[in-house]
Image (tube, rainbow, N blue to C red; front, side):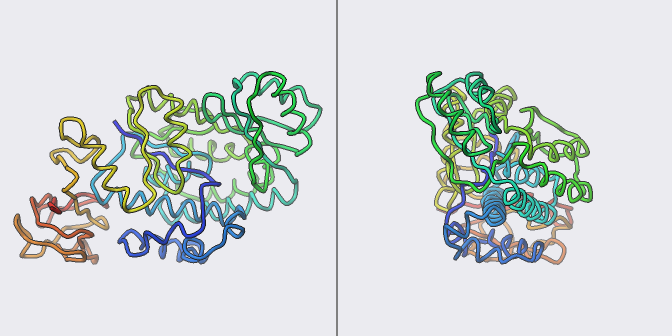
Length: 391
């Protein structure tokens, strides 16, 4: 079983969208621009490191970049058994699970970034990672300070993030060293996220969340605030509202995924932070990351290593490294091109048919090995249409 995990703020970097610009999944970037009114292509292609540090830019760019990668993976026919996201990544996970529409996800993340940046400007704070100390001892270090400092992220064994007032963090760091911490590492962020300092952002974001349709997820989604699976859409309103001021329990979330039977943790989006945390937290796990189109083949190869069969792919199809699935771009009735049959050669952009008013185009060059959707069949978005061999 595989889980998709999605990174949070801090994983963004300049030019993260450049390698995806010519990929079919890039269409999501233009859809995000329409949904938010923000210049999302600029954020993913041209924004500087300094510009991307701003919370409003970091969150939107990371969210959209992660969903571009997700869309590319889904076009291969790979589906997860469960999903989770770290902080901002929880919104990506909910969008990936169908609980949020793509447009609503974009709008909520935009509002979240603006709200958190405003809260940080209103009440200055920062964050630091405490390395090499147990969770309980980090809590003791924070409790021993006469000032505003709290645990913000329980990330993994020996890695806990604290946040609050800069002077209070420094004092907590000294106590943590006395208790055996190996290192206190400042995190260059513009606020004390997941602490009471974010209360103004929570209050502002609550209205936007309450006005957004949140459906029951199609896949299990593990929540940050308690590290448990929640299946009710309305329940997620309260979880998202409380998330801003409560610590991210990522270590507990990883253990919950493992208890569900997950052995492969696939991080989708910029960076590899979650990949490293999974490796350190879950013994025997197989952590992977996909951030570029070149890493799609590595993902497929990993998923087909055991017995040649792909884990988490659509039933009935065993995809090897030289095989691909073309999926539907939308929900609707499939009308195939008359030439679509086994043995048909395809090139990138080849039209296999239509679903509603949208063309089904192949993102790959290869030969059709099998047709997976019937003429007149009602298909869902990302449902496989054809299976092809690329070599």
